[in-house]
Image (cartoon, rainbow, N blue to C red; front, side, top):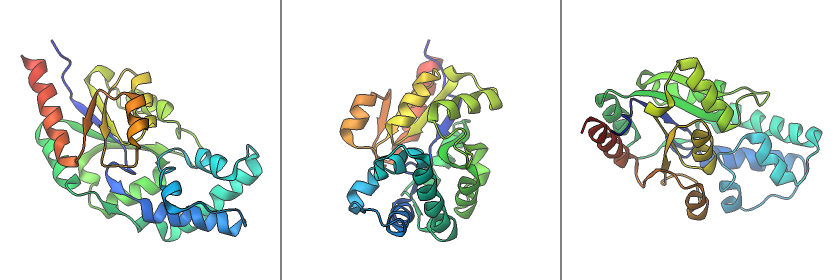
Length: 225
């Protein structure tokens, strides 16, 4: 018998919200202020999703934590002020969340974004009531790694990983969930490149938010057959 899905873990950037504008502008602000080269928007877009320190390590081409910390500080300076809400829900997300709840699934946010920002974004779009719990990183980088974050979520919420499904748009979501024994679904409407997702090998793929309830409904039906 298949394992029933009872809990759905959802990424934020690139899964629930299209946050490209605010994140890219804040990356550019940090690099310009530090008088560093600024890649084009397409290159910056590909860096949305991983932990912020990892992103600036790549952008600056250095492991010097002083430089990386300064870039992150400048990024957050703008992001907390204006970038946070240069953002929008993907089409069909609100309906997707409601449909998942109608399937008696409990929903949890699992984002590498600092939880302080994540709570504000979820509340801004009126989504808080859909979630049984919100989980994210701390400003010092604690739980920015997706494997650590999902493990913490499972332990804190006392969830059986066999009854969970992680939904996210980047390889970090897929690999972090798999490391914790959680099945995975790629949100192909987000920022993950096709080759990246193919290499990560998610269990399922959805190309629009409205497809996810169908996948979950199928898994529930298989478990009861």
